[in-house]
Length: 212
Figure 1 (cartoon, rainbow, N blue to C red):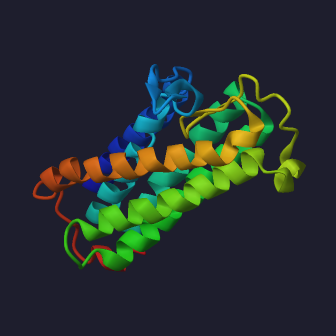
Figure 2: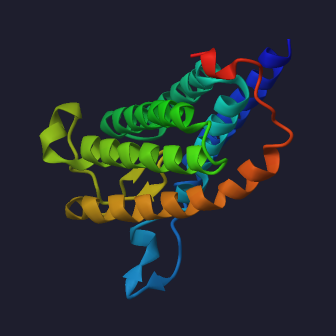
């Protein structure tokens, strides 16, 4: 069945993005910006993670929110497994929670806006999803209020799988969040190019809006 084959393809793409983000998060950017070392704020993983929103939106456009949620669920499982393998339980909980909440919100917003201008649904959905994603991850991972998830005293070389942010000092977690979100916004805008290019090829299935 076409839906199953294409869904499997999207699942594989989502898995590839999650795995790539976890690998690239180990490589910080070099150089400085306004006297700030970029390596203290971002890794290359920050540029690959937003592609997950593109995959979710393309799935939603073609097959509707129900299938999109299945793709997100697969990505969530990969994110949690890899995060537990590569980081602390607290970082893994933060990564998995942020990924799932951000992607599910993206699906909901996209579905509400799918009838509007072609760029509104993917752009607004990914931006709103990124806000929630960023807030949940950095709060769960570093805020004292969420210390129930585990200690956060190993920040000397602590890193955040999936989200792509290199962390070096606990007091700077808010600046890490801002840097991460700025990258997500920029990449989200760039992702409109492949989304627009694929629109004519990835036609929505009949009654796709009813497949909630």
